[in-house]
Image 1 (tube, rainbow, N blue to C red):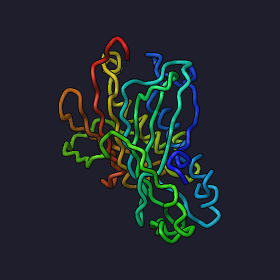
Image 2 (cartoon, one colour):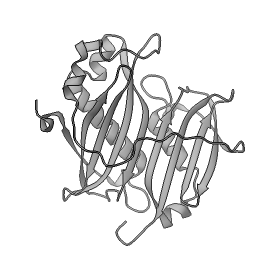
Image 3 (cartoon, helix red, strand yellow):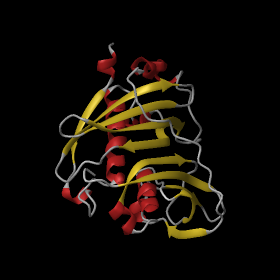
Image 4 (cartoon, rainbow, N blue to C red):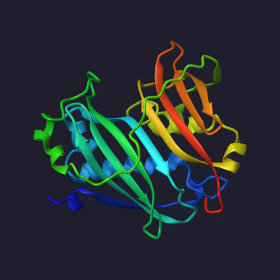
Length: 253
């Protein structure tokens, strides 16, 4: 199997109801497209969630890093390519590239996934399940952005609280991974988004949260363009961490 056959391409469009006040696709919607492309790629090759659920397993997202030169604008068609970079015993690395309507690469993403048992919630051995067939799709396609970094938040002053509601909960009964992104972005005033755009966004998922959980948000300001965020439950358990790097807009973005 050639590397070209290991890469899947999926088309999308920036619908008017998926863009923000600047006319650009929101990070949350782009995140959904990225995760959907991962799901389509896995399903088409026999190791998607639909097949795994029959065996009482599922994929969970552990890390995500997205880096963009620009975001698709309203009505623009764009494509997402995805491929598997590495497979380890308990984790797999999956990468993505985002191209605009002209075929120009405008961004990349890196992600780390684990396969878990739905009953025990413990990771499964990827070298055992499905006869290690996932390793057949490992691809040497370059992804020229840094891997997700280690995020540590030291500030103990809570900057906001949120109680998990109906619209936050996914099919597994847990807080949706993309909803975390949206709530984190809401921590910043709209004035920031008028002057700056998101250059890099990272998520590190640590624990699950559920309907009715009260989540508290903590933030470190590394500098005027970089922030690190941590979300905790009422008992202090860390749910996820995030890093945002902004940059000042120019006439092209």
